[in-house]
Image 1 (cartoon, rainbow over the protein chains, first blue to last red):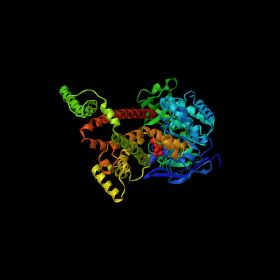
Image 2 (image 1 turned 135 degrees about the vertical axis):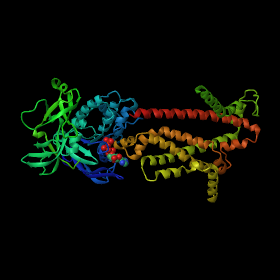
Image 3 (image 1 turned 45 degrees about the vertical axis):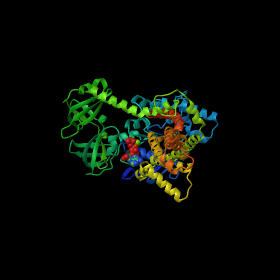
Image 4 (image 1 turned 90 degrees about the vertical axis):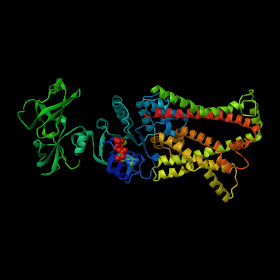
Amino acid sequence: MSDESFISIKNISKHFGNVRACDDVSFDIRRGEFFALLGPSGCGKTTLLRMLAGFEIPTMGEIFIDGQPMAAIPPYERPVNMVFQSYAIFPHLTVAQNIGFGLRKDKLPKAEMDKKVDEALEMIAMAGYGHRGADELSGGQRQRVALARALIKKPKVLLLDEPLGALDKKLREQMQLELRDLQREVGITFVFVTHDQEEALTMSDRIAVMAAGKALEIDSPVDLYEKPKTPFCADFLGTMNFFEGSVDSIGGGEAVIKTAEVGSLKSKGPNMDFSTNDRVMAAIRPENIEVAFEQPSSGSFITGKVRASAFLGDRAHVYINVEGRKDPVLTAMQNMDGAASQMSGQDHTVWLTWSDEAVILLPQDAS
Amino acid sequence: MNKSKFGALGVYTVLYLAFLYIPVLFIPLFSFNDSIYIAFPLKEFTLQHYVDMIERKPLINALYNSLQVGFSVSVISTIFGMLAAKTFTKYHIPGTKPLTAFISIPLVIPLIILGISLLTVLKYFDIKLSLFTVGAAHTVICIPFAMFVLISRLEGFDKSMEEAAQDLGETPWITFWRVTFPLAMPGIIASLLLCFTISFDEFILAFFLGSDQPTLPLYMWSQLRFPAKLPSVLALGSVIFLTSFAVVCFAEWVRRRGVQTQTGAAI
Ligand SMILES: Nc1ncnc2c1ncn2[C@@H]1O[C@H](COP(=O)(O)OP(=O)(O)OP(=O)(O)O)[C@@H](O)[C@H]1O
Ligand SMILES: [Mg+2]
C-alpha cells in the first residue's frame, strides 16, 4: 500500500460496557514515521494501541497494516511488536533468553541465534549482560531489554506504551534521544503512547492528540503547537491564555474579536474559517506576550498588575492580573540578564503587548 | 500494664504451642521406646519398632496404596485446578463468582455426607469400590483447594507477560508452556503438596468408598485394636512426620524463591 497510509485506522470504536474507550477514531500513520498518541489519562491511548497489537477487538471499524486487514489476524501473527508499559520482562529467563524469546519459531541454528542476540545486546549497549537474571536489571536496562526483544523480530511496526513512564527524569531524557536515534537507524514505524506533552513534542514526527476516546487533531509537533485547531489541543500542548468572545469582523486574513474581558482583539492567526458573530476563543501563548514596564507608544495593549512570578531557572512565568478578567494572564519570559528578577516584586503595573499573528482563533464549543 | 499483658500473652503462647506439639512429639518418642505400651516411664531405646514396620507387609501395602492415591489425586486435581484458575483469571466471563462458589461446594459439605452420597451413586451405577473410587472422591475435594492456590498465584503475576509472549509470536498454547507454566510453578508445587497431604490423611471418604485395599489412615485405625501392633504404627507415624516436615520446608523454600523473582520483576 501507499507509504502515506501504512497503518490505516478506519472508524475504530471500542466499548467496554458503557465506557467508550475509543469513539470513531480514524487516521493514517505513514511508513517509517515516529507517531505519538498523546492525551490525558483514560482517553483511550492504550486501548487503541492494544487494538493495533490485536489484544483488543474493535467494537466497530477496521485496521489495516501495510494494506492488510487485521480483523482476522491474532496477536501472534501480526507484523507488529510491542514494548509494554511494565516491560513484561520474563522473570524466569535470563536477559539473553528474554531477547531471543521471539526467535524460537525461526528455527535458527544455535550459533546464528546467539549471534543475533549478541547483536541486539550490542545495539542496546548491554553487551555482556546476556547471562544476567531478569531481576538483576535497573529500570532503564529493563526498558532496553524490552526494546531489543521486540526489535529482534524486525516488525513492521513497533508499539510502545509509555515506555519511559517508569524512569526518572534524567534517564527519561536520555532515553528519549536514544529511542529517537534508534528509530531513525532501524527505520521501523514507531507508534508511541504518552501522556507527557513535552515527550511527544521532542520525539515524534506527528502527534495524534486524543481526548475522551476521540482523536482531536493529527499534525506535526510544530503545527500542533503553533496552529492548534481546538481549545483542548491548545491547552494540552503547552499553556495558553484564552479570551472568550465573538467575531466582530472577518476577512482578508484578519479578524477582530470582541471580548468582554479585554475589549477588542485583532487576529492574523492561522484559523480564519469563521463568520461574523461566531462564538470563538482568542488564544495567545504566554511566550508571545511581551511585558513592558512603560506604556508602549503604539499598537494594542492591555495593562495589568504582576500578581506572582514563578522562577524556572532559564525562564520565568509571570502571572498578571488584568482588570475585568478572573484568571490572571500568564506570560513567559526568557531570563536573560536577570530579567526575571525585575518581576519579583508584586503589584508592578505592566503593559502587555503581542503581535496580531500570535492571536489564534479557536471554536468555542469543541472543548 | 504493658508487662502484665505481655506475661498473659506469653503464657497463652506457651500453652498453645505445648498443646499443639507435645502430643505430636510423643509419637517419635514412644516409637523408640522398648515397650508395646504407650506409657511412662520410658524403657530402653530401640529401633525394633522400625524393623517391625518394614517387615509388616500389610502396613507397607497400605502405605503404598496411600502414596498411589495421593500422587494421582494431587496431579489430577492440580490439572483441573489449573484449568479452572486459568479460566477465572484470564476471561472476565459473566458468572465467575457463582461458578467459583459452585466449584468450592465440596469444601463446605461435611465429608460424611459427601461420602454417603458418593457411595449411593456408585452403588446405583454398580461401580466396584476400589482405590480408584477413593481417588475420585479425593479429587472432588482437592480441586477447589488446587484452584484457589493457583488463582492466587496466577493473579500474582503481570498479565502482560502472557501478552508479551503472544506478541512475540507464540500461540496461546505455547505461551502457556513457555511463560504461564514456569511462572505458576511455585503455585503448582504448592497445589501438588496440598492435594497430596489432603488425600494422604483423609479418612472418612476412604472409609466409605474404600475396598479391601485400605489406605494408610484406614489401616492405622484398624491396628489400634491390637496393642502389640501399635508401636510399629508409631514408627511409621514418625517417618511420615519427618517426611512432611521436610516437604513443608521444601515447599516454603520454593514459595520464597517464587516471591523473590516476582518482586524482582515488578518495577
Ligand atoms: N478491559 C477494560 N474493561 C473496562 N474498561 C476498560 C478496559 N480497558 C480500558 N478501559 C477503560 O477505557 C478507557 C480508556 O482506557 P485506556 O487504558 O485506553 O486509557 P489511557 O489513555 O491508556 O490512559 P492512561 O494514560 O491512564 O494509561 C478508560 O476509561 C478505562 O477505564
Ligand atoms: Mg495507558
